[in-house]
Amino acid sequence: MGGVIRGLDENRQVVESEPLQAAPPPPPKPRKSLTQELLETLLLTLILFGVAKFSLQNFKVQGTSMVPTLQDGEFILVDKISYRFHLPSHGDIVVFKFPEDTTRDFIKRVIGVPGDTVAIKPVNGINHVFVDGKELYEPYISAEPDSPSMTFENCVNPKGCSYHVKPNELFVMGDNRNFSYDSRAWGPMPMKDMIGHALISYWPLPRLAFLPSQYSYATTHK
Image (cartoon, rainbow, N blue to C red; front, side):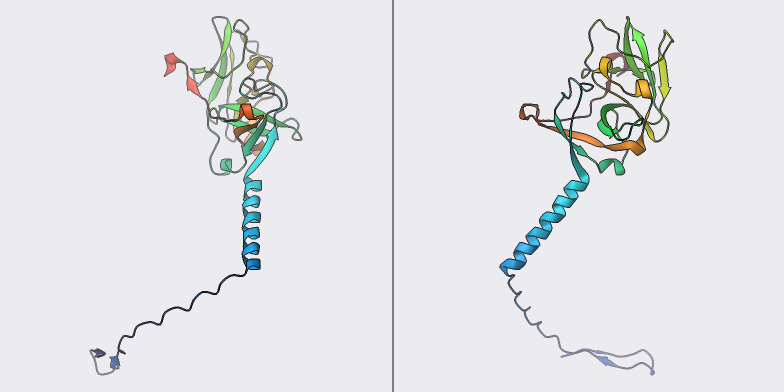
């Protein structure tokens, strides 16, 4: 039987609830036609393709400035969306529009982020990179053992030169340190020229590999 709810004053109405009844079973869903299923599959494929096209792009490496990490002629995949949500990290390999000619795309490694002071100083006759006074450990670079690495262009200080990285810019260098045209020559890379984060080398197949961020300090600075 239904329960009765009575008001606390004379002006309120008495509400009587109806007995509970079992809900009728839902009607069976109509089966999709083959045409409808094909259209939905095609639409999903187009959406996924659009997302991939927007977030990923392939590039062909031209030149040797990133040897030995990347060779001339390698194909890489670049993530174009993640840097919209966070800043690049030390050691990331990035693709960007060359600040002096934005019709050209460059690829380099991030050495300094905003707030860093990047310096190149001689150690036992060979130039080494320092960030905020700490020497970097760079096993990924290519340099002749007895040849001093190229320093800042027009640097005349025998004790080394430095650059303080400002907001919205990066200091980038190639791994082939003696043969890379980078921030040491043309200055910082503006973040507005960023294309994305190089993630994977996928061709030729023997070079298939992820491109991890590599960045650490020399033993004396750990």
